[in-house]
Image (cartoon, rainbow, N blue to C red; front, side):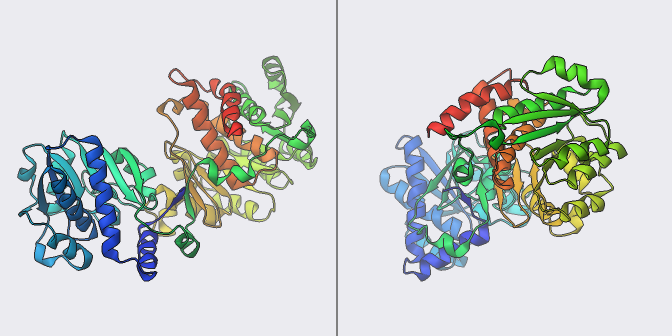
Amino acid sequence: MIKLLTTAEMAEADRLTIAAGTPGAVLMERAGRAVADAVAARCPLGRKVAVVAGPGNNGGDGFVAACILAERGYSVRVLLLGEAGRLKGDAAGAAAKWTGPVEPATPESLADNPIIVDALFGAGLDRPVQGAAQAIIEAMYRATGPVFAVDLPSGISGDTGAVMGPVAVKATETITFFRKKPGHLLLPGRLHCGRVTVADIGIDHAVLSAIKPLCSANEPDLWRAHFPVPRIDGHKYNRGHAVVVSGKMPATGAARLAARGALRAGAGLVTIAAPNDTLAVHAAATTAIMVRMVDTAVDLGSLLADRRHNVAVLGPGGGVGAPMRDLVAAALTSPAAVLLDADALTSFAGHLESLTTAIKARRSPVILTPHSGEFERLFNGLERIGNIKSKLEGARTAARLSEAILLIKGPDTVIASPDGRAAVTANAPPTLATAGAGDVLAGMIAGLLAQGMPAFEAAAAAAWLHGEAANAFGPGLISEDLPEMLPAVYRKFLAG
């Protein structure tokens, strides 16, 4: 259930199912029934329900739901955008079964504040909404009663999560079919969906092997098989040695946050590689984490030449400019896996080609972990490379361009691999918007990498665990709390 289907992939799932012998009308009947069941589960009998139907199959689902709700005793009106005579195929067949009047869909028709079934557009919207359609969307947006969206709230793109106009419907519950779409998880779409229910309408899971979707929800089933579970015969040396490169005074705290995240994530050993004038500060503030003097790029290259130091993190509190670029160059010529965050990324704004050239010349993995501002600075002009419409497509394009794993942070953190795989994370609470949380995430990824977890899976797992740690702590979270919540999160995860 973790696979996310684009609107084109969902259409192919429908096509394959129909070709295998299930009529489209049967799929529509099941979809409409799922919508009716959702309304009935939340709303008492006898309430007024307005089904706002569009001109396509989404509208057909709405007609089916209208028939079933009326049979169950609800006071149902159908409001159609367009003319009933122009409905085609299965939607026309569903409309023919509705015996009540069909009214024009106008803002005024919703004035009595009914329960609303939004069956206007669904996930397939691919252009901005205007005119009468936008007016009825705005009326549904202003509704104060429950709104049940069919497939996706009208005005939201199923592929990008974007609002395709001034506003989009905000649903109480969204009922989608077979699998979620990226727009259910990407912002701002996720904020419009309310509770999301995935209904089984009889599409066989086997169609996924033909479709081969590359995008998933970032949940444990995506990476569980690769997760490094401690072994009874294991020891610290086979759990890897992460190196976190520190900046100068007074920004040393970021490196310690990353180092603590790496240690709590399970790295066997962690060393902070620090300039000479910060050694005393780091040594006084750490215990299990080691400290090593690294003043220059040459020093870092010598440290990472030892293959036991199998992961390097650069950027947290590291400073912006040529010295950081030199440190990154030294790390990228080493055999270690490399994670670049924060200042390491900003230092390459305007120098993207030199960075990608160095990444492509190596065999060990590289992970880039920008927030949206760092991403825009580093990949300035990326939208000119292709048809970039969303955070998801931006991450995929940047991963393909750089041949690195991209993790773009945020409430809908996206992880993308050069091979096209991608994952969208949806468990991050608002409390993660706190200074240093990204430094801890960088360290957590490094801790999983140190233990041999593949780079894409390590980034995805760390992003999910990071969100769970924040959820476990609750309000008042600061970044220092995140590593200390990991033992409880690990206990729960490993017990499962």
